[in-house]
Length: 120
Image (cartoon, rainbow, N blue to C red; front, top):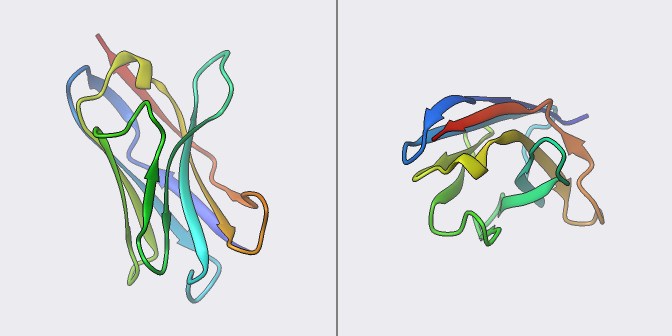
């Protein structure tokens, strides 16, 4: 069973930076997995932020974060990162790490979330 644990959330001023970390465990390797970050603000639907393929590190981003956020992964330590730059108050949300096998049609594994609050 895959376990995902997020960390790194907190309070940051608009225009600042923050790095979120997702520690993945439960498998010796995550090849053929897609790792992603989602976020959910109060009263809003969950929103796709970014994903990365474990094998090739191919990335994709949601329109609202493109050019400001960067997703990366560390194969050796089974870590996934989300570097958040030039943050805005509208980035305030609970950020979730998620994972799925390429053969799966949906994200099967989720972390507990980490709160990010951006002050204006």
